[in-house]
Length: 73
Image (cartoon, rainbow, N blue to C red; front, top):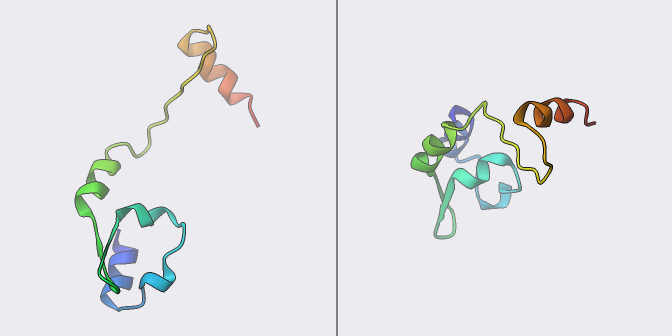
């Protein structure tokens, strides 16, 4: 979070710089030019850092799903 907090404070980040970067989901656009960080959303999302989930319709055990996933490109 420090990286884009620094850019917001230095006014080097504005609406013209917004693209599809991962941190965009944590930004709140207010008016034409005011950008702030949705810190509550950032904190909620941080709880999932490092976790990986699997959804499959295969009739496999959890260990088989994980093993098969490791063989994917």
